[in-house]
Amino acid sequence: MGLLSLLALGVTHPSELRSMIHYKVWRDPLNDIKQNPEASGWNRPQMQECWTFLDQTSRSFAAVIKELKGELSRVICIFYLVLRALDTIEDDMTIPASKKISLLVDFYKVLEQPGWTFTESGPNEKDRHLLVGFDKVIAEYQLLRQGYRTVISDITAKMGAGMASYIEASSSSPLSVDRWQDFDLYCHFVAGLVGEGLSRLWSESGIERPWIGNQLKLSNHMGLFLQKTNIIRDYAEDCDEGRFFWRARLPLAPQGAVMAIATIELMFQNPNVFKRNVKIRKGQAVQLILKAVNPRDVAYTFRDYSRSIHKRLSAKDPNFVAWSVELGRIEQWCETFFPSFVSAASESREPDARAAAMKKWTEQRKFLATVAQRRVRGGADPKTLNPAKLVHPRDLMSMEEKEAQEKKERDEMVMFFVLVVIGISVVMGGTALIAWMIVWYWTQEGQDPLTANLQYYYYAAKAGGMGALADAFATVREAVSGYLGGSTAAAAGKIEL
Image (cartoon, rainbow, N blue to C red; front, side, top):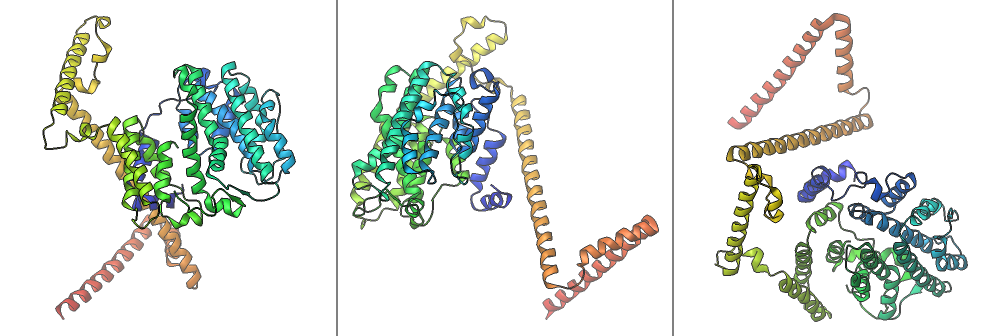
């Protein structure tokens, strides 16, 4: 985002600007690929190129993939780049359909061909450079464990075959979808298979249990949800390029998952969907990333956006009942698995026995943990203590230490905002000065007074020394004082009248 965009965001959505600053300045990433080069492959130049490809081809997924721990970040990076290369070939309208079909069907085979690259993409293709340097991706792919390679190759083969079938169907006429089943099948090929591959990779890594990789229906529905959101978002662009994913006789109804539900809420009853791509703001995306840190917050994010959609529903909408039922199911699911009374009880004035019992239990645990930590400081054997009873060091500070720490944090915050205000003032002042000079040279003749005065003071100081410069400033000060005095007297006369 440019500087003017940031300033506009600070005026229109200050909370989003705050989230972006917090994300860039204070948030510590869950994983740093440079700190663990063995697992991330950062110690190899070809893998560094792959991380660069990831940054260049993805806006939101790159940040998420880099924070995966261990070798999984490298595996998912390669998986993403392989599928991105496949998608780049599919989207390239300069490649003949016959050649494109053969490339898509056999693309999984090139993963076993060291040094393979593709330089025949159109010069304006956005991700052309990925195919030109694809030999580096292949080299890193071949360093993966056989289990990872099997999953990536299998998903690539299925997706390539599915894409090729739609390319062949659209070679004689613009691509259109006549049935909802066809629509789901297309989304399965381009996104549902991605969800299946991710689940299988997680199982292969040992982080998730083996049966997670077999939850194909759940993985497919997750991919369909994301892809259908993207298709609605790109409706205008797809129509311009001759791709129609919506049945003509049906009405248009309505990344992480929270970004998808936020995008759906933004697109709901939004006529701009038919004119251009509708996307959430970057600041809003950062807010969602910072908020989606646990299942409860993700569920409540879905609930909040579903409520926002429900408020805008009209009883005249032919799909009013269907919308209400689906939104109600989201609300019911959230309340079932994450009851609202747990979070609301501390703020409610009504007594709640369950919340009171939970509060008492947590206070006891905190007390025991504090005692245990102090015993460790006093020389007790830490191996005899339960690690779950340890607390944050701040909880063990004295009142004076806490006050000093809080004062330091407040001072740092104040200094930060002072610097931000000064920076914004300097930028706005410079912008105003530049605008004034442009307007002067367009509307007036001769040199502008600011430049003329600066030249006068410079030559005066050069010729007569600092004394002449001081006299010049005194003259200016007297002129300004006289002007202000005359203006004040005139204003006072108007007030008396």
